[in-house]
Amino acid sequence: MSLLFEPENLLPKDGIAIYHGVVFNEKEATIICKELLDTIPWKQDEVLMFGKKIMTKRKVAWYADAGITYTYAGVKKSGLQWTETLIRIKQKVEAITGANYNACLLNLYHEGEEGMGWHRDNEKDIVTKSSIASVSLGAVRKFAFKHATSNERLDIELANGSLLDMKGSIQEYWYHSLPKTKKVKQIRINLTFRWMHG
Image 1: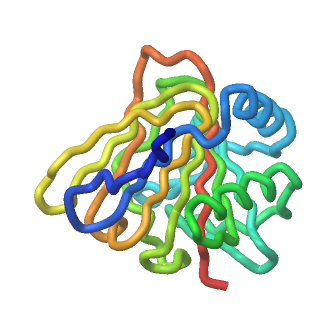
Image 2: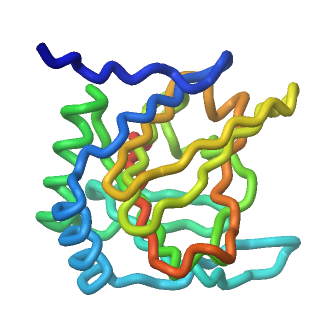
C-alpha cells in the first residue's frame, strides 16, 4: 500500500508555505526549461532604487490575462500573451494548489551569483492573501524565509521541477529571498503564478 505525500505548512505561524516537491519530473523539467530559455523574450529587469533606474543581471518576462498590469520597484509592466506551454504549466499548478492565476512573472538566473534580496510580494496589484505559486526549473537553489518581527529563519532547497505555494498572511509577516552562491554554475528559471486585481 502506497502512502500519499501530504505536504505540510513549512511556517510555524503567520502564513502558509506549502512545498509540494517535484511536480514535473526531470525529463519534463529539462524540456520545459530549454523551451522557455529559447522562446521567452527575456529582458533585464528594470528597478527603481534610491531614485535611479537599475538594470539587473537576472532577466524577466511578465505574462498575464488581457488588461492585467503589475507595478513593482517603481516600474509598470503590461502582460505578454500566454504561450501554450505556460498555459499547460498554469493548469497543472492550478490543479495542485486549487487556486486560480491570471498572471506569471518569470525570472531567469544565469548562475548562482544572481539572486534576489529580502522582499515581500505585497504590492497592491496582487490580491491580498491569494496564492503565489512558484515553479523552479534548472539548478537547485536555496530559498530563505525570515519573519518580519521575530527574525525567525527557515531555509529550504527548491528542486528542479518543484512547486512552492505561498498564501494566507505570509506576505504580511514573512520576507523571502534567493541567496546568492558561488557554488551554482547552472541556470535556474522561476515562474511565479499570481492572482492580480483586474
